[in-house]
Amino acid sequence: MLAKRVIPCLDVHGAQVTRGVQFGRAEAGELRNVGDPVELALRYNEQGADEMVFYDITASAHGRATMVEVIERVADQCFMPLTVGGGLRSVEDMYVMLRAGADKVSINSSALDNPALIQAGAEKYGSQCIVVSIDAKRTGPDRWEVFRHGGRKATGLDAVEWAQKAVALGSGEIVLNSIDADGTKAGYDLTITRRISDAVGVPVVASGGAGKLEHMVEVLIEGRADAVLAASIFHFGEYSVDNVKQFLAQHNVPVRLLSAQL
Image (cartoon, rainbow, N blue to C red):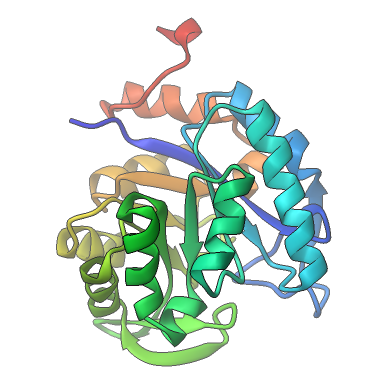
């Protein structure tokens, strides 16, 4: 069985890592600054993170330049794969981040606006570089819908169907963000994670809701996710990446441990 991945997520706004609850907005003062992105990346690299995800939530030209600088600095000092998302609307935007040192690019709203962008990116850089991030919210007893604009605007798309279409167009990975669970620390949404994991033939990264170590075991086993993404529990020092990996290993979840833990 392939090793499961543990992935810290850094939301970058104004050259700082921020954190909100249920897709809190910067303009509404709903975000909390938690540190310098390069310093945090180095910390997680030392703790044995399998990958790192950066989301540029500034959505401005200045913010884009800041993110490029962050990725260049992190790539120069860290030796784990980096994924970058936020405001990437063309294959040229993807190239800027890949050239800066990213290994993958993540697209969300731009893929909804222009699904052909998934295929164009996959054809130019390979499916392994293209991640489609899906913000899903339960809208009925047995329905999860895709939302956009930070979870504030419904698209009418069924989350499972959109994931299948994204993979058919060339996405090599899906990041599934549960809007209902985001930042609540109440646990991942196991049902929609399992449905999408079963419906697509590429890795699915579970995001939103991590509050304790048991939640990660649950989503990797019951939710059949390939990786767990978390922010708050790492940023605020509740757990380290190696804490998570040791716990997963103790519960028979295959992970890559730091050599000192072997």
